Image 1 (cartoon, one colour):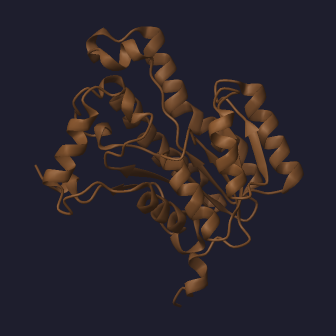
Image 2 (cartoon, one colour):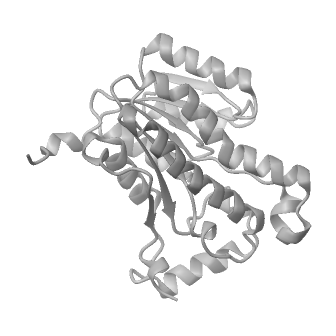
Image 3 (cartoon, rainbow, N blue to C red):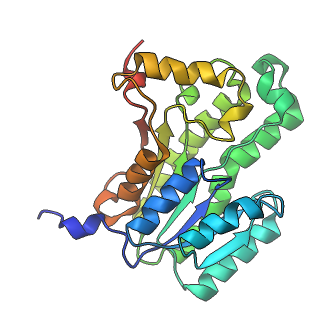
Length: 260
C-alpha cells in the first residue's frame, strides 16, 4: 500500500526542539521546517543569557512551550517533561541538537584530554540524548521519532575536531542502541550528519572555515548544505512517512563523504 502524500506532514503532531542558540542554528532550521509542516512545538533555551536570542524565534513559530532547560540540570529536564505531559498529554517527536566540550579539551590533542573534560563532553553531547529519550518515550503513546545531530568526525579524524569526534561516535552508537530498544514501542531513533555549516557551535572549532571551503571545492554539489535542507530531512524522519527508518546515521553534506 502506497503512503499518501499527507503522511509526510506533521499536522497534529507535537514535538520538542532542544538546541536552538540563534537563527543560524541547525536546530532552528529544523524548528522552522517542523512548524511549516504543521507541527506544534515546545522549544528550550539554555539559560537566561540565551533566552533573548531564542524566545523571539520560538514565538515566531508559535511555540506552545518556551522553557529554560539545561541538560546538565536533572530538575530542569524533569520539569520540562512534566509541563509537556500537562500541556499535551503526549509527545510525537524530539530533536536533540546539542554538543559541548571545554575549549581546552576541544582545541588540544585527544592524548591530552582531561578526565573532567572527557566526562563533560560525553555527558552533554551523548548521554543527554539518553536522558531525554528516557523521559520522552513514555509520552510517545502512539509511537514517535527521536532525532539527534552528528558529524562525519565521528567516523574519520577531522582536523581540530578532537574530543568531539569521540563524543559523536558515542552518540551514533547510542542512536543504534536506543533504536533497538525503543523499536518495539514504534519509536524510531536516527542521527542526521550534516556537512559543515556556519553555526555558533562550529565557530569554536579551529580552522572551521577550511572545512567549509573544502566542501565548497570538493563536494559533488560544490556548495555547503543549508539548515533548511537539514530541516527538510528532519521533517521527513519525524513524519509518518519516515518512521520505517531507524538506527541510521543519514548524511546530508552535498556528497562530500563519498569522495577522498
